[in-house]
Length: 103
Image 1 (spheres, rainbow, N blue to C red):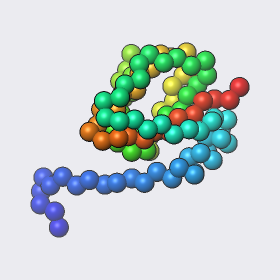
Image 2: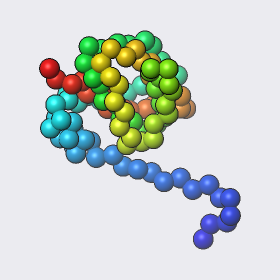
Image 3: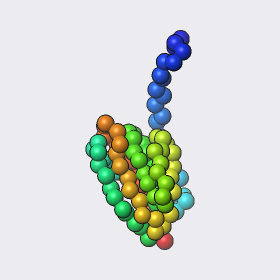
């Protein structure tokens, strides 16, 4: 039993194989990116839609004037032509999936 106000952490396990299969079925590639704490990828623009999903750690994602801190397993669609920045805001290495829409 937990005391009132006790913080409990739940760990979500992301099934990489299922995500890869789903993205490929939807016409996206699938890749894995691993970043150390503090890594920033600034102002990237792609000519096709991009999917991004956090698998481990913490990231901050900014595009179209909005900033997101997605939860593990949350899928984000970055539209083609949208400049975006991804930053590892956590204290540990992170891992995230990305995929580009196939033409």
